[in-house]
Image (cartoon, rainbow, N blue to C red; front, side):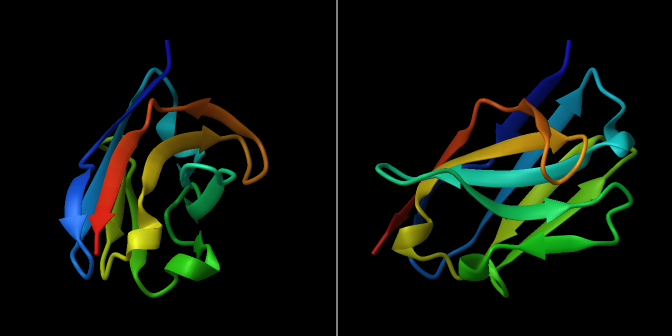
Length: 118
């Protein structure tokens, strides 16, 4: 059974930082692209960051470029999202996902809430 479990969400003031972590089990982790998504109330789900299998290549949504950093540890089967200079518009439920490719996301975590106060 595949499980993706996010942690690290919470309340932070604007300008602050949070680090999200996702622990994976039940899958061949290094064979999957990993991504972080978010969904804010009334908005569509957004892919904020993606990291390829080896971890060498990453991509980011424009709103988070320069502020968020995605990383992975294939030995520990974890993927992290370091979020700096947080803004109120970053508030959302953040989800970890594992995909066969960057367009096919096979497994999802349950999400972790990030709240940013202004």
